[in-house]
Image (cartoon, rainbow, N blue to C red):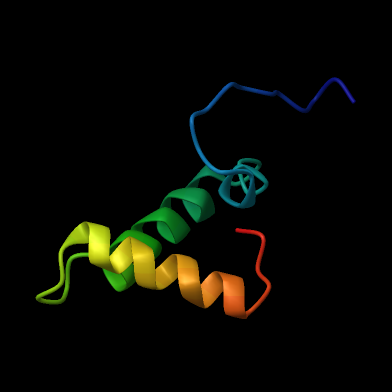
Length: 62
């Protein structure tokens, strides 16, 4: 399909799949950054560790 353009954007595949709608992709990235990290007294490393364990428990590959 010649109308599809691929790029080597340095984003996770779960976000890259939305690249056909750049506004949506940016909004999801912004939501994730604001909702997931930085709004607590935990360090980024602690937040990432919790997110990793929750993903593991939920059997989420992302």
